[in-house]
Image (cartoon, rainbow over all chains, first blue to last red; front, side, top):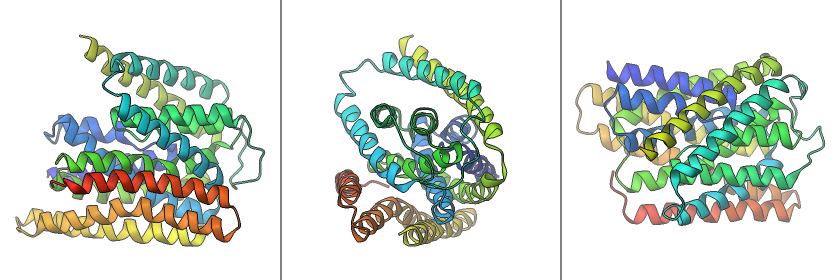
Length: 255
Length: 92
């Protein structure tokens, strides 16, 4: 019964992740802690593994269809990895509640901007057919995404998608596909560390990743058929929820 | 390059997920092999991101884009360092 629940949750996370360019940890982690009886750190470890699956399964399709901007993704990965490394080195020195509070503000602001600008990026579905600008700001946001990943064990897609779509000028679907391509690497770095600490519960991971794979394959088939405006509206709503969740985490650290 | 990267992503993930599916069934029948099969599946999944980075670096080298190839190699090196450090005290 638990295995079935985990597979269903994984399916939702994979579907959501493939469509939104985020890892789906927002869906998977709370269910694992509340319904599968895992500790938070164990749930994060399973969620990170799920992000790797969601990223790889959806990217396999997006890369072949030419939707993933590999060039932009590789350059931004540098900033993301640098952010993750710096954050892991400075984690003990930075008040985590302050950082989480800042990330919550960024998430809410980006949600508002995504909502107001939805539909303006066009329906472009081919990587490279647009000018890429504001590399500095995009790199800074990717650095922040990596830092968030290093600090709280997420893929950071909620910052990468707006960095590429709102700041750098990539069409929303290309940004989503490229974020999916990138978050697998970010999540892998954190997942290795969690696994090494013995936090990865294999009995919970196995059914979850099976569900994630199915959800991500379905999501990658659906993405080209859904309008960018609709996806951006949904993404804005998701960001608002992520922002609220991070703010609550910050609040719980302060108490 | 796109085709190679897509194949690596698909094969790596499908292998890992297939092993995890088998492990799920083995857990259901309380087989003592379940955790070993699941660990193999997770190993395949964990190995996919570095492999696709290597394929991207090789692809950019073939396309005479040394800066992009270097970027991919730097990310790959950092990821391998983290993996190596983790592997030294792996406790599944």
